[in-house]
Length: 205
Image: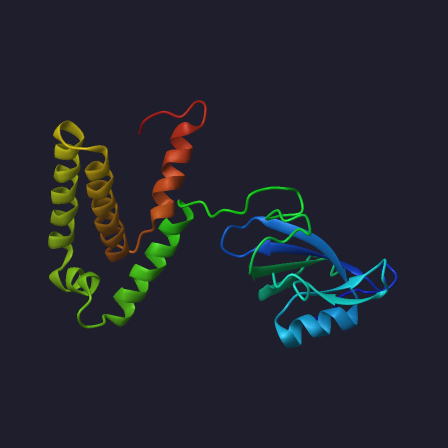
């Protein structure tokens, strides 16, 4: 246990449950020291029920367990943020969250995951990987591939189908991320640039 102040609220601390993949807040529960210890040891979120006066592991009835990925204290050491992989809907009403919200991953978040994977490929350079072959071919070839895929995207946009345009655009984006990785840059830096351009008063460099 890492300096959690259970005494501040009569032996309990609030525990905010967040989906580690979607970043969606799923629910809020309370833990005493025993519930916290069980959560840490089993890697399944366990709360203290204030109405029943006992421990309960989320999912023990429904099967919708919350698998712990990380546990963090706040700055005052009296609130927990627990990131999880949920097995299913979290709320007893059957909804994804206790606020009735849909817990669905934003596909844009995958771009960061994809670059993390590409960076791993660059570190390990496994044989038989297309990404490895791009890094071995060097910067000029990677840049060329971005241009080739951009041209394919333009052709599909002008004379093809929406489905093929998405396909070729995805190829271009993948090769762009490979190129960024080779330069030590991140796709988030491009997102930040676009965000700055969207701000009132932005002027072109």
